[in-house]
Every structure is written in structure tokens, then in C-alpha cells.
Image (cartoon, rainbow, N blue to C red; front, top):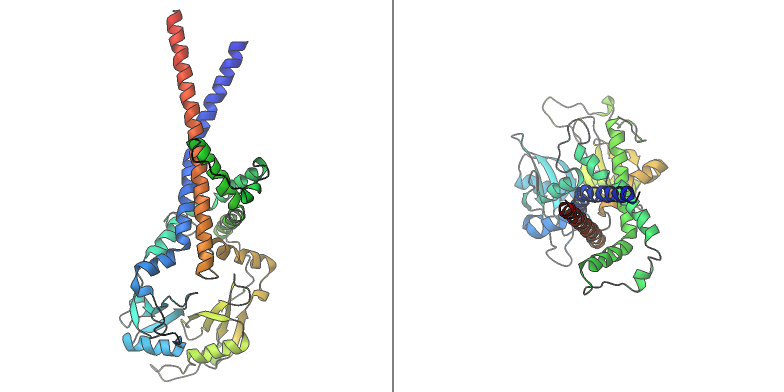
Length: 394
């Protein structure tokens, strides 16, 4: 009877060790995603540090930002004949504007334009560091081919064990709030105790951040499922177009008279005085509107305005109040996940907690691996001793 129980216990231990080693790749994958996500948070700032073409420091304390019309004139001077498709202003004025243009030869490019002088400082690469690290983090660089890639599902599915770890960690770690008042990190008690203390310390301080990452990551998983099944929750409706009778009739080859960007911006300011425009999208056809968008009083969601390019009338607004409660929640997921809606200081906070979460995963991986390795050594040693005992008995 004792022999049977011993064999069952030994078998259970063997399965536990096997389970531990199988979980190691998941730990490593989660560590990779957390690390790349932390880097992606400040990837724009890293590009700013590495590439002088992206910078746009004010030449003087009283320097003013150029108007949209002045930007258009500056681009025309440096890129004669180029057609501007859109202009994007970054959250921070130390960054150059991004201006997408199509040249007369048919080639397209995104230019870095100084918002104070109008100088074209360079061109954005087809796949720069910012895009690379974000694609690596979000979908593992796998191509979008008619739907969301497997990498998107693999990364967003990590939100499930992340949320489970948060809940179970709070349950297991009794009175975790004490670490806020008396943090403890013992460095002279051995590696296992050190990694255990670091795991609890990073976990307790990262609870709100982990909750945000788990919930927003879960939404990305749901978004992929809805998208691949052609299910939409949008209330935007059909995009408006300029009526055929509203398009001016001109001679063949002549350009239709259109309002300037400043006139469009003025119409937007009059209609939505609290909107801070951050991008302008030009019409792609004679029946399209000029689209102006930016953040209003609720910074997590972009609001947009469609302006008739011929008479300057605002023909459609898409505000926060125009969205359903579900859209309001789901539309807030991405900015909450990336932290790119309130400037550099919030990004630095996200970076700090992102690194804390990365440390949490790494320390947990070290504790898990150490425990599994010790148990593996014990099983191998016991089996070797048992084999030697059988050989001696024979």
C-alpha cells in the first residue's frame, strides 16, 4: 500500500515538474510582450532623440506655430506641384508636423515639416523604429491578410492569464497594501528570497496598471473576433458626401474653387470651440469633405468635423456625445492602453509601470524556474538513488 501511494506521489511530482517546464515559454512570451510594450510607449520620443529631422524646437520664446495655410505655402515652395493629403500635428510642439504628399510623378511620401519655420526637414521612412516596435509588440510583425493576424490574437489573449494572475495574486498575497508603507527587498538572503520580494513589490505597486493592461488587452481580443466576423458596434453611419449639385462646374482641366484650410479651421472653431485640431484630411475626390479632427474635453476620444470644401459649411460633426455608451468605453481602450493622450509625463508614468510589470513577470519567471529546477533535481536524484538501491539489492 505504501509503495502504491509512493508511486502515485512520485507520478504527481513528475507531472508537476513537466507542467512547470511547459509554462516557461508562456512566461518568456509574456516577458517579451511587456518589454516591447514598455519600449513602444516612448518609441516616438526615442525617434525624436535619435533623428534630428523629427525635432522642432521653437527658435525663440515668443515663436508662434504656423497656420495651416502657411504650412501649405511652405510645402509648395519646397515641393513644387506636390498635393498635400493630410497634415498631422503631434501632441507635443517639440515634434515636427507630419505632412503626407503625393508628388507629380505619382510617388507618395510623409514629410517632417517644422511647425515654426515651414522647412521640410526630412522624410519618414516606410517602416521606422516607431512603427517597427509597435508592430512587434501588438501583432509580432505578422502581416494583415484579409483579417487580424494570428500574432494579434496571441498577444491579446495574454490578457486572460494577466487578469487571472492579478485576481489570484490579490487573493494569495494577504494584506498586500502593507508593502506601500513598508516595502521590503532583501538582497542578502539568497536569490530565491530576493526574486520573491521583488515579485511581490512590483506586483503590489503595479495593480492599477496591470488592471488597465488586462482590460484593454482583452478588448483588443474582442475587437479582433468582432472584426473577423464582420460585426460592427459603430453608430457612425454612412460617411457624408458633397451633393452633385454642390460641386462647382468648371472648364475641363481647371481646378474647382475651394476654401482655404484656415477658413475650414475657422468654421470648425466656430462650431466646436473646445476642439483642439490635430489633423486635417484633404478630400480624395470632388465629392469628399475636408475632415478636421482632434481631442475635445474628453481626451481619450478623437472628435471630427466634415467641412464642405466649396462653401465652408460644417455638414457633419462626430462628437463624444454622438457615440453610444458602448462606443465611449471601447473607444477609450486604445489610448488607455498606450498612454499617448496627455503628453510626455503620462508616457513616462506608463514607461515606469510598464518596466515594473516587466520586472514582475521576469521575477515570477525566475521564482517559477528556480522552483521547477529544484524539484527536477530532486526527482532525478531520488530516481538515481532508487536505481542504485535496486542494483545493490540484486
